[in-house]
Length: 106
Image 1: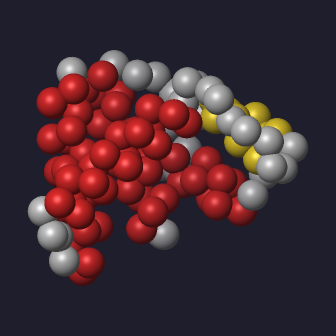
Image 2 (image 1 turned 180 degrees about the horizontal axis):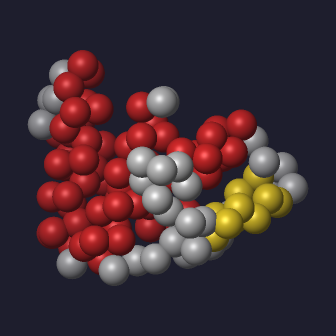
């Protein structure tokens, strides 16, 4: 499994548990990474039941699912950058940085 996809699914779990978000559908273009993400999120390991809504390529997405995940992910990465986290540790520490951000903003 791709590290980025795993980090995004972990971010979703944090949003579900800490912020009480629910993910019913994901609206995105039909690119391979989006299809892989939906497949992984709905797998037996993660048990999300999202429905994919595929849009045309190169169109802006302004939906309530994509933006909170993106903001939370980018802020967690900023925390890691400020802490000078070594590259080989970023995938291990990412969920904890994300949890820290979620606690500070809730």
